[in-house]
Image (cartoon, rainbow, N blue to C red; front, side):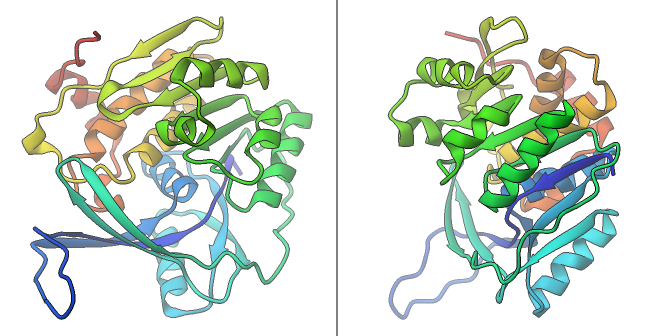
Length: 299
């Protein structure tokens, strides 16, 4: 096992339409995609596509959607360690004008405890905070072993404050800042106070404000993609996390600025495609990004 990712799994149904029908109205979508979803789950698929195949602890149900998900994971060689639920979770996503509206149907009533795995030489752990008991248990175990723990702080979870004590790399979304009533710089101070060695706040078109190994705060600008080329921003953050995990696992001695630049290229690729599977980049895709798009000027 090279790495372990832990998070909730969805089947994402993404569709492009002019408007959402109301009442008894009907409409036909212009395009659609069906793929895997979930923060750490999508990151795991990205890492696998790039060449380092992680193991995945995630929710799964013995229904046709659950079997579809297991088929998707098998296609990428991902070993899934399921935590059973009664029904598969679904996300309905409507991207439009650089934003995305989402309706989720989620089952997070676990029928069994989380699986206990032999970590062996597993080098890194990536979490999104879901499966809170499993996330905290494995974060503590990896900390004892002195191995990297990464957190996608997409939103406030029941265990976020406690979990951060065991996290080395915390990259959070603006949404978490809003939920905790903190500015970007206050969030970075908060992450530092928890002992996170690397911390960042992603802000879409404004790039990422982050601090490096020395604690230096800096902004990594987003790449300037023409609006006409932006198809679907949903999942781009998950791709970012999966790509920096791949970069770390492939080049553990490189600086985090290099890992994040690589991840920026992956998420820039992702927003130009509909649905999570179509978004997954190859290394060649990422290498071509910086030659095609320039950084947005930093104010």
